Length: 405
Image (cartoon, rainbow, N blue to C red; front, side, top):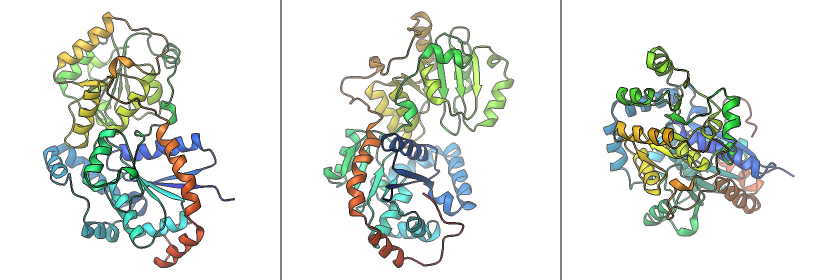
């Protein structure tokens, strides 16, 4: 009997969309070891030369012209992608998507970015008979996520569900699952033991992260952080921002035994376990991982758009506060150093930073929800339906070899 197959489609605008897809794939494997999952950044896969240029241009625009990005986000906030835009996306950038689906023969498709979501929706209108689930990877919902062909939306909070309902999505097509995190974040490790293993001091510790593109923080705040190094251990995770890594390593105040400067790392789960506070951009994935670990947060002022909405959710829910001034850092670090927290095992949830009105986050929920959706779906999607769809698309083979799932 053929094992069930899940195809997760994302895009490389930022790192959170693809990170959520991989997290869900690992979660599905843990919940259902017999299910095969495949994650593809669709634009990069189909256009490996052009896509990185587009993503680089987006990143530069976000850095240089954040107000422009904010304007575009707000003016299009309640609008779905229109038919002409979807056609252009398909013809220019996603021409061979149908061949990808035909070769991989998934039982369900899950999209973690609006673009592949729109493209698969268009294929469904043309006869593709595969359930489409849309995983919204933020704590807000932009209009571009919404397509009538989506079978079910997997969302982070009741607030996001309500926003979808306002836009006309039936309640029966929305499921609150939380944003998925890698199974490494489902449990917490022993703080003291992990500090020893990682060569860290057993003292109050702050973890500083900026997402996959690196930390974005002004010089005054950085100096304030460094001034606490005798009393608070600092771990900087700067992602792919190699320029900042090199610069910080040359600045005398960061050449301190209690300061660790890291680039890209796969040890984020352990780094959260050894830490007492996280300082970060309010990206949906990083904040959800910290929430799963029960780690309180301080937020770097957000970029316009999704980050603003994410930040508002986490602040109102009591998971953290915005760094409006260096006094916020000073007050939190003083609290850490004077009220030495228990340096033993980190509890699974830090209830102090979670208000009663916020629903408890279950990091296993999204993977379990997909498991529950998958098996009824596999009885509905037959090989025959896939063969009919395959026959309706262009017969030219996809460039390269056959794609194993």
